[in-house]
Length: 288
Image (tube, rainbow, N blue to C red; front, side):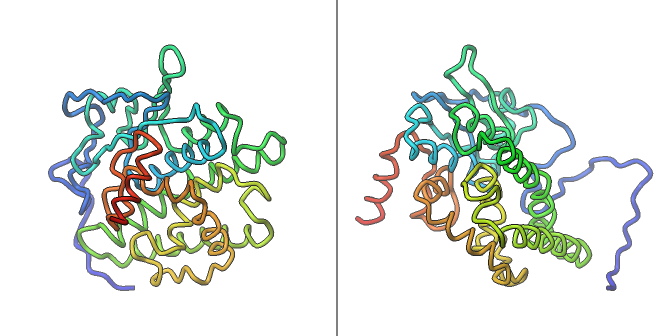
């Protein structure tokens, strides 16, 4: 590998210009709000503030799965947080998530309302609150959490690593793309070997581990992330393909993918969700 690079790190790093390619305006070395903006509050017990990135889709799929399972108390309003416009730095959002990342959730069934941030924490919170998609058996519960936390630790190499340098960085650099492509394929191989002996990640039961991992690795396998399916040869991971397609066919997953989506096919975009009938209206719009 040969690549010219005349950059030498300074003794002390200072922030002198925006960096980060396509999402440069969202990157800064300090936390806290940049402007005052209250968040809207709808009529339902749960208020979600998000965008349909893989992490955001985790929350909407989980809520839709709970509703499909008959938990009417899981009704929610989903408000759009446009990270390209800096909505995540508004004072109201930062109050819920000081890390300024989507998704963020407010549970208004408690007094005072409970804030929940970090996508894995939202999945675990809802699973425990409703007693769903998290096995009660000790071994199965532990295996579910193993794979939930595996995803939380592994996906940054896929997203912030491979995805950034392959799709969003201002210039294509061989070393980081090669490094993170190798790691992404290793992770796919981890999943493929594991899924060769079981239907879902924790066994025969569909759990929050599957929801968390599918939004990243399942969608990557289905060719929906970074336009990188051919580059990574995702079709060779046959067990991941089988698992990804089975989950993709679930009605709640299909609805969850649509919520807070502002990109891709117009028929798959439901910018905000405030009632189950919003999906019916979207279907009617598509047909007529």
